Amino acid sequence: MNNEAFNRAFALTIGHEGGYVNDPTDKGGETNFGISKRAYPNEDIKNLTIERAKELYYNDYWLKQSCHLLEGYPEIAIELFDTSVNMGVGRGAKIFQEALNLANRNQRDYENIIIDGGIGAKTISTFRACKKKRMLFNIMNLLQGEFYINLMRRNENYEKYVGWFDRVDIIKK
Image 1: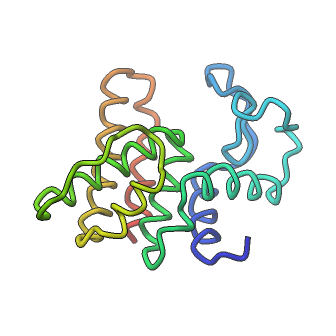
Image 2 (image 1 turned 60 degrees about the vertical axis):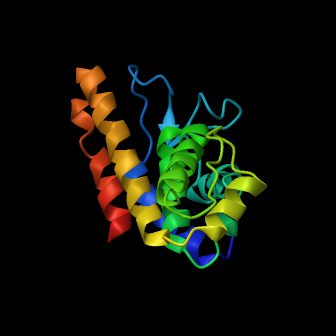
C-alpha cells in the first residue's frame, strides 16, 4: 500500500470517519474508522486497528473501484474513493459514471456509458478518453453534494450531518 494517492485518500477519509462509535440509530451498527459491523460482520470493530482499517479500505474500496487505474489524476481517484466509502461502492461508481457522461457530452462520437454501478473496462477507457478531467472532477463533487442535499431533504435527522459537505470541499483543496 505504498501508493501516494491512496495514502492521501486514506488520510482525508479517516479525517472524516473518526474513531469508535456505537450509535443505536445507525443502521451500520458499531463503527470504527468508518468500518461498520454491518459491512464487516466478521471484524472485531471495537478493537479494529488503523492498520487493519487501511487494509480494508485499500482492498475493498481503492482497488475495487479501480482508483489505481486513474493514472495521473489523483484528485479524481481520491474523490471516487471517498465518495465510495461514504455512500457505498455502487453509488460511488454511479456518480463517477454519470459524471463521465456529463463531462463527455459534447465530445464527438461519444456514446454514454451505462450507469450500472460497476467500474469495468468500458468505464476506465471512457475515463482515459475524457478530455475534460477538471470538469469531470467538478461534476463528481456537484453530484456528491446533490446526493447529500436530497438526503437531508428527505430525512430531517440528517441535518446534523452538514459535515458531509466538508467531504466535498476538502478534496477540492
